[in-house]
Length: 120
Image 1 (cartoon, helix red, strand yellow):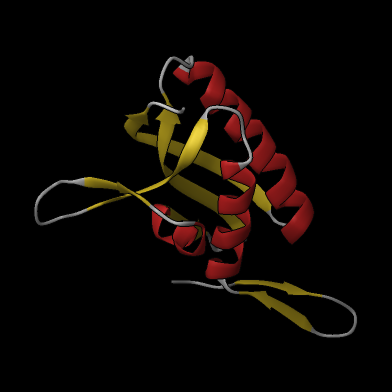
Image 2: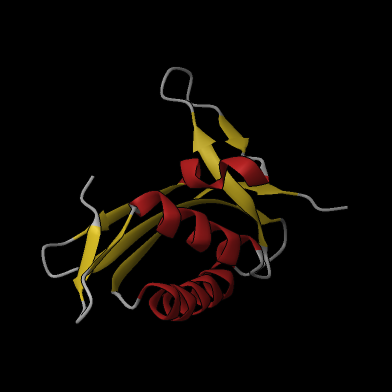
């Protein structure tokens, strides 16, 4: 995985993609309608809800040569919500906050809805 690097007057800043994934995941789970990040087992196809400590497993980050970010989110949504509205909200919040946090441009955000959960 490529690391995001920026050159400043004082030196080079390098951001590990896991740092970006953890931040993006914490922003995402605060969004209305998002229950959490999902992990899909490749062996049996089962989807499981990730604990807060494991958010990064439901997110993939790709960094282009131009330092642009592509984020892939695997999420579980709340039952009864409008998936398009929830997705739009997630994209807008994550794009704004990740760009502010990193100083990098978010080029694309892909959302994969892996499951639905009824919230008590």
